Amino acid sequence: MTERKMSETGPSKLPIPTASFPTHNSPRIWFITSALSPLVVRLIKLLLAHGDYIAAGLPPTEIEDNERSVEFRELINECKSGRKDREGWKDRIRGIRRVMGQCGAAIAEAIGTFGRIDIMLCCTSEVEELSTSLSTQNLVRTQFETIFFSQVNFIKSVLPTLRSQNTGHIIILTGITGHIGTPGMSMYTAAIWALEGYCDSLAYEIAPFNIKLSIVQPNKEISVLTNKIIFAPQLLQYESQNNPAPDIRNILTNALNSHPDTRIHEAKGKNYKPEIISRFPKLPSEARDRLVMETVHALTAIGGHENPPARHIVGYEGVASVKEKLKTVSEELEDFVEVSCAVDIFKSDVRREALEGDTRGPGSAGGFGS
Image 1 (cartoon, helix red, strand yellow):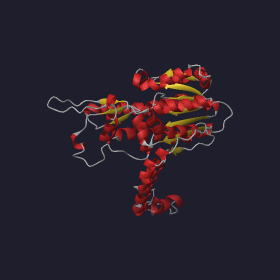
Image 2 (spheres, helix red, strand yellow):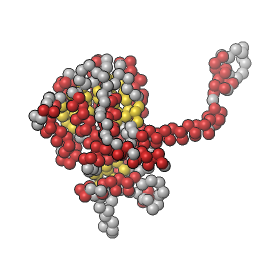
Image 3 (cartoon, one colour):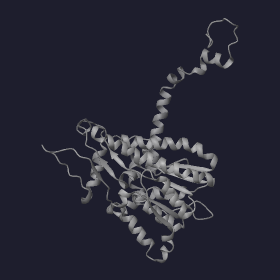
Image 4 (cartoon, helix red, strand yellow):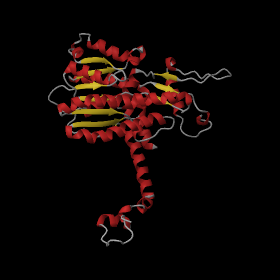
C-alpha cells in the first residue's frame, strides 16, 4: 500500500521530462488511426516539432463533435498560424477522414501524400461499461468493431506497403487491461485481449520482412479518461449494494460529474426508463498533460526504434500491477504443478512406445496398431 501511495503522490510533483527520440537518418512518416484524443494531439505536436510527418485519421463521428475535436482544431490553427516555431508544420500533417471499411483508402491517401509509411500507431478506443443484456448486445458488437476489427483492418491494409519497403513499425496502444481484467469492463477487456492476441501472433509472421510490432500498455485511466465512455443500463445484481466487487461505474461517474457539462443525472421514479449514456470526459488542460505525457514520451522513444520492445508497460503503478498479476499466476502454477505433470504424456508408456516404435512382432496385442 505504501508503494502505491508513493506512486500516486510522488511522480505527480515531478516536472514532465523532455521527449526523447530514437536515432534516425531522415524524418519518419506516421499513420495514426485516430488523432483526436488528448494523448494523440500532444504526441502529434512533439512529432511535428521533431520534424516528422503525420497522416492523422479522423473518425467522422468524433471530428463533427466540437468538444471532442477542439484540441485538434486548435493544433491545425497553430500549424497555419505562420509562427516561427510552427514553420513547415502545415505541410507535414494531413487529416484523413476514415470510416470502417475504408481503411485501405485511408492508407492509400497517406502514401499518395507522403510517399510511404514508416510507423503506424493503432490507438482507436472506446470504453463501454457494460452489463450484458438484450438491450446492450449491439454495444458489445460495437466495442469489438471499434477496438478489434477496425485496428486489424488498418494493419492488414498497411502490411503490403511495409512488406514491399522491407521495413516498418506497427505500434498498438492498449492498456494494462491486456494483462489484468477489470470488473464492469469485461467486454472492453475482451476486445483488448483479442487485439493483443492477434498482434502477438502477427509479430512472428511479419518479422522476416523486418517489420517490428510493439504493444504499449499505459494505465487503464489513460484510455478511459481520454476516450468516449458509454454506460449501459445497470443490472440489479451488479449494483454496489448487491455486489461487493469494485464498482467501476461509480468511479467513472464521479470523474464525469467533476465537470458540469458531463454530469450524469440519476433519474429514478415510476416513469424512469433505463437508457444508454455516453460522454467524452472533460479534464483541465494541466490535468490532461499530467495524465497522458508519460505515455506520449514512451511512444516517441519507441516509435521507429531499431530494436523496439514487443511489449512496453508505461508507468510505475502499471509495472507494479502487472508484476503482481504475474506473481499470482506463477504461484498458482506452482501450487498445481503436480496436477499439470500428472497428465504429461511424455512420461507415459503410450508416449514411450510412440517415440521408440513398436518393436513387437506381428499379431502382438497393444500399441497403436491394435
